[in-house]
Amino acid sequence: MANSFGSFCDGLFVDMCINTQLELPSGRETILAFFERLQKQLPELNNFARRENGEYVLEEEVQGQRVRWVGLENDRIIAGCADPEELTKAYTLHNSVLDLIPYMLGVSPLDIDSMDITYTMDFDYQGNHDEVIAEALLAGSSFASLFDMPQTKAVSCCPSVVIALSDDCRLQARIAIESRTTAFDVRSEKFKADEPISLYLTVRRYPKPGPEFDMIKTYAEQCRIAESLMFEKMIPHFVQPLNNAIAQRR
Image (spheres, rainbow, N blue to C red):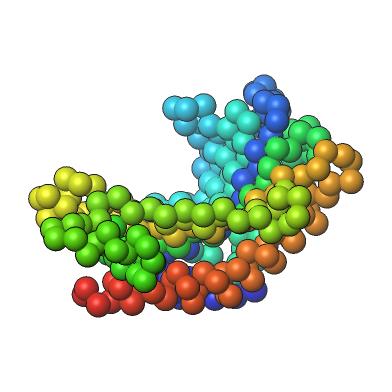
């Protein structure tokens, strides 16, 4: 599947995250065996490291930039892909991890607290991020009336909402936007050029305990839902207004 989302932003990240109820195995042999098996399937992942926080990461780098990665934390498994030319590149990585973790890390359906698929879209803008977000996403709302007062400026505007997508609330979507502008930036009128506005869409499943939970099938369903939300809601109602507000300031 072609990446039809990347053309709307300056950076696209597609991430999968599995949160577990119990701590993941931390033994040397188990960790190395998992990453070695993953590397056999995806030999481009050739940079292995342990972070200061204890996270183990196997990643692919191209010209010094991280392109794909898989990370193991204490109770979380993360797999991500940056700016994929095709979404299947990210999905293939995610499915490879899902195939391995039951056998290599002992992750069972009973152990999974939640499973996420997240699309992150970055928008480059050297200016007041909060002002752009307020104009693009809050115009016409009750919050917009706050900016009608004299000398008011948005200095912290990061709206977030979570919606249930099922009657039992076990399937949810979170839409959030992150500004990286600080009050100091606004006072000094010196804005960083290398820190983007980030827009997040996460579809999360809290599985019902039981052996019938199929990670591969559930992941595919979440991807379909996320793609549908991107096309039907995110692009027209969030992305395009953001791009318009940024374009008006350039």
